[in-house]
Image 1 (cartoon, rainbow, N blue to C red):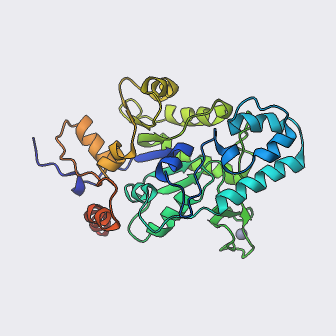
Image 2: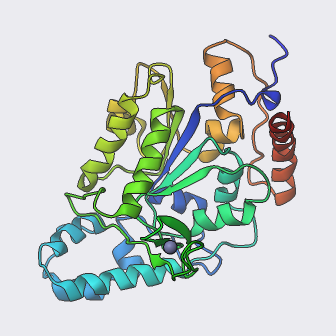
Image 3: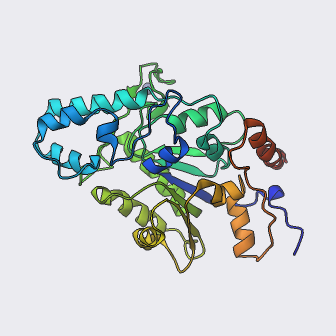
Length: 333
Ligand SMILES: [Zn+2]
């Protein structure tokens, strides 16, 4: 026992990297967005967003219900108009999604990480961006990377600047272009579009200097081998990976999950959690890396002061505010 208190410790420069897949948005919005629009997984996207009639017209037979697989099949038809139609339907569905007034899991997530950390998402929905936007005055916020494009973001291809979709470029004043939404074709080229390339660079740099990588609701589809390869390569360059930790939040069977992420896992340095509330992020908000280091490397005893389960805004701020105050005091020194 000792009197170590992680709230007062902001010494860790290494990042906590969080990677979100469709399962994370589903877990964050189990009842859908403010209007009850559901957050689809790849296997139910076709039905849920109304793509079924368009696809049934083009394909006599689906090999699977999984959008990734069906899209691979469709892209082989070389039908530009059909592809535009699918893209338009996806964009229109995700663009209309909005956060409810009440606190969401994404609010808890963005307030539980710091500026040295990053949340990289494969999701097209705008809800992570909106959570970052509505909480950003609270304190130092994590960075974000949108690995498959996002309906909330626009970019200027001349100045390489990003802002909210529909805005003007802060440098040249031209209207921003919508970001390209990247679809599941087997041979994705993440380097082709400069926006997508930059988003991947942001993630790779953080993975190279990460202490914890949390993979939340991302199923690592076989149609996206390049994504896994890029992440694996960045992790292999991380000189702390032998004592770093991989954390997986997934409702799938633990053995399956363990096998899927095997290339990232060193020895027993991994945890599989079924629920965000049990993750290191929620158990040690804004101090996940310091707390992990203290426990694993220095064998310190830590009293757990986790985020309350389903907190109100007030309860969340009561938990987070003292931690942000310590960070501000440290940076003012
Ligand atoms: Zn510009």
